Length: 408
Ligand code: MLT
Image (cartoon, rainbow, N blue to C red; front, side, top):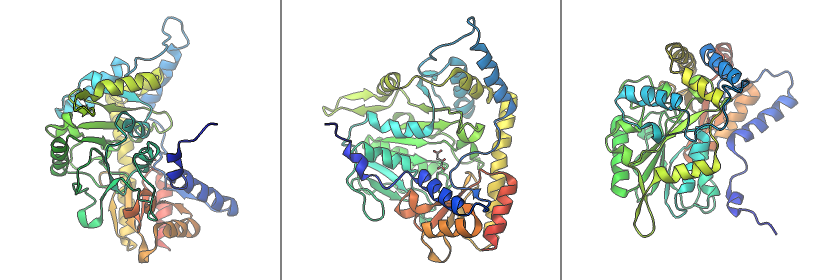
């Protein structure tokens, strides 16, 4: 008799975004004339820059010819891409990362879900609240938690509340933890971690021999020159942090799929005997067993984003979405909403009006304005009373959505 992994039974009803899609589709079917504007899931809407698409087309052509055909890619990524990543993402900022510390992948969602699996099930995990649900659910699936309570918080996880009162910056936990998920620019609040705040977490991790998973998938959206783009800008971080980056939100690759994770060779974790082990070797072992790498055309496309033309086009894409965010901030503030984020991130974190709970406000926006947001409660107990709006939309849709919300 096959038995299930009972940890899955602890998970809340469904993953947040499919649940939003389900509710939206039900409304659309009942109201076929409604012109629904989707600002829920953070999925890009603009075409991929021509220079990147051309590079992918050329690479696909190479695959048709026996002389230039390529089979399995190198496990961690082709040199042409890995070296461009090292030079542009880190070298230009004075950050030392070795090419073989880069592990290419098909997404930061997958990496941030998978990374926990190389660590012991008895580690204590700290999450911010609100949090990107993948960090939480992957640890529930792995058996690091008990049951969820009525607010959706799981027994055994250490939640670090990020509230308006603390500027949505995670305070250090009040007890020892072993694995820590940080996300800056933050999904969902749009907050960014200043150097000092990051330095405190790095110092904490060094003291506790803990490891930080630093999700920087939205790094391209940082506009404030004082904000670190990489956790490795903080001294000592190489010994305690793994960083995740993505091509999804800057190159328009949410469907194409390409990302990378940096695992420094200095990073150690410990066996029950106290013996230290290089995390790099363990992650390498895991990836080479379970993953076969990013396709050649996609890697060529990603590499083209670092050419002069690619960099300009990517900057334009990001600026377009950031201008959406600015416009949304202005219009929603003028309409009387209290909101956060949007300056260094493509997300706005909006207080629900008149104390509505976040799913009620989601329903109000859907049924009265035909605008889809993401209810804050879906990101954790401290997300209750908020709704996230994504700036990933066409300009005309953003303007129309703001008009409709303004009329509510
Ligand atoms: C989101 O809406 O939070 C994003 O789509 C998450 C993701 O990139 O997986």
